[in-house]
Length: 244
Image 1 (cartoon, rainbow, N blue to C red):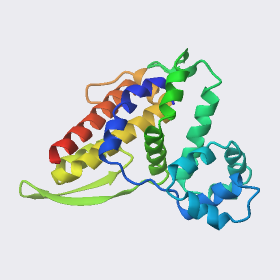
Image 2: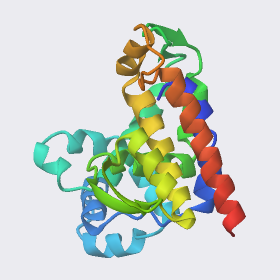
Image 3: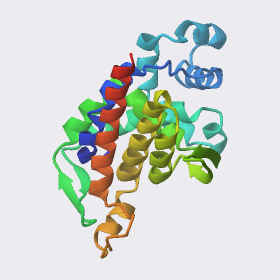
């Protein structure tokens, strides 16, 4: 996770406080976890029932590095667990890796990778369960995207538009026409897209910064995505507060 993404992620905590949904592991996740960590026990069903929904028991088990080794030992193991479980384990591994480093590589707005001595800041961030859970859930949401066609009536005329929940412009347009009470969820999705693209594909986004942009161009730079993500996280939280 590039440290500059911290400017976007700083608004996640507020959002997660408002929309704190139960992010639970499913039965297959728990079985894989128990089989991997509790190797000296045979009463796996009992342990699964014991640790279910118990964060204080699950947390140390999720820290076991053996989970990473076993997950990638066989491809079949990757489909045994949910994307949310997989990304939770991966984020914990990233945190362990960063504990041994003084810097992380940051992609600047020209596409150049430079060392930034903020590894500790990222480590501390991933040490906060509420942030880590949000990131795991957000990353999992991009393993399967949705698209479709929507029809709506505006100013006496019917309109038709195809939408994808991986496209910022689509989500902005959809937020404009849906009921106000549904907008915070779409604002969150817009912010998630910005965070995902700027954090996972910064090299791709910075290509746009080096190109000449006409005043009609809809291309966004890395900086644009960062600013947009931060703004929509903030708006989502504010509008949700007002609707309460």
